[in-house]
Image (tube, rainbow, N blue to C red; front, top):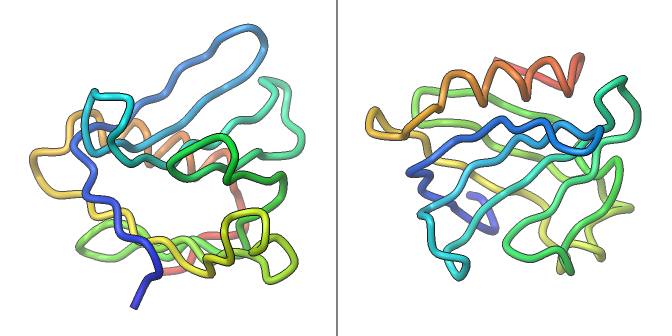
Length: 117
């Protein structure tokens, strides 16, 4: 069971100021929970944060498992403290999640080799 579960209503892929941002959010309000991945457009380290930029780190993701309910992110043990000692995050992606597929595709390209079925 995941330490944090996010029920995504929205997925997003945005390129801005030389960075690619991929995210999933429970809603549009700033106070709603989210996960966000950021990488320079040309490639490079991936920054990951959950819920607030305070809880983020580079190279934090160890594995991404995709299942019928969404994805589960496994956090690298050495990065867990930066994320509030979280070890796994479930992102539930239902049929009503707007722009889920483009966000999942971009995330898979951003994190090659970390995906598991």
